[in-house]
Structure formats: structure tokens, C-alpha cells
Image (tube, rainbow, N blue to C red; front, top):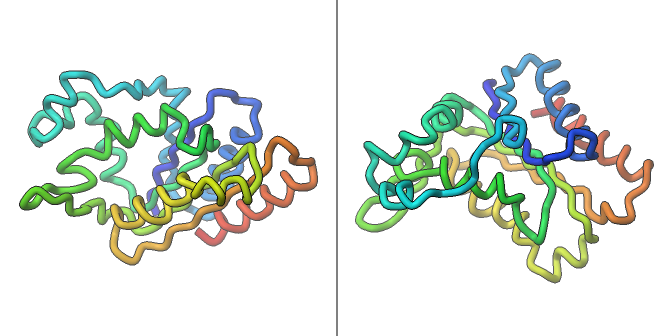
Length: 193
């Protein structure tokens, strides 16, 4: 498969960066073609400009400023994301990617004023993420990041596409052993992807 990997962490020595490297390594070893989109390394601008917002529903113009990213998304068969959860959401750079690239005519079509998902080239999705707090705290907050992947993104891609959500909770109190267990879990998931 051709997999678009979105990585969103600014520190190359972080645990998240180690997860990113592991994901690339395991997917390539299984013969997948990986389009490794490190949003920070590529200096992706997450800000939706005034002009982009004004052109948002103009299908001939809305893609013009992010065309290379749209083409990468459209050419992928699967999507893998690797990012930390910050303030119970995506890092700003990843949120901005969704705002600027998941456009009308790209990830959905407007039909009679209603959005109809259309990113049907994506047949598999996986999110690999880390939380500072524990699972109970995330659950009490409603765990918005999990819902964004398991509910919103699930209905945007091909109907019935499998969606995996792999999360390491409680990074603030993680240990070498807990991080190793999670790395092993991610390795197994990428080997089976």
C-alpha cells in the first residue's frame, strides 16, 4: 500500500519521534511505500489565511495553496498519524493540516448544504499517540482526540475502513518498561497493517 504518514512533534529526540521512526521502519520492512510527511520538518504552515477561508467553497481555488499536500493525500491508500495529545486535542500543526488540506472537493463534497465524506481512497487508518495524563482523566474529559479519530475520521474515509487508535496514556509517569511495551504494541500493529 501507499501510506501517508503524518508526524506532528517538534522535538526529534522525543518518545513521539522514536515512535515515528519505528512506524516508518516497520511499514517499509513490510513492503509498503511510505510518504513520510513530518509536518514540523517540512515547515507546514497550519494557519488558514483570510484568502483561504474566503475561497474555502470555491473548488477551483481552495486547493491552490496546499496542492502538494492534497496530491499526497489523494494518492495514498492508507493514513497513519503519529502525534502527541496536547490539551486534549491535536497539536496545532496537525489541526491546521486538517483545516487546510481536508477541504471541500478533497475530503468531502457539499450536496444540498450537507457534507458528504469522499476521501474513499483511504482504506485504512491508524493513529499512534501519547497523552500526558492517565486514561481515566482522558475518559472523564470525554477523550476528544480518540473520538476525532474513531468517529469523525472514520466517516471521512472509505466506508468500513478499519481504524486503529493506539495510545500511550500517562506519559508524565511513564517508565522505560511502559514505553517499551507500547513500542512493542505499535511494532506489532504496523507489522499487521
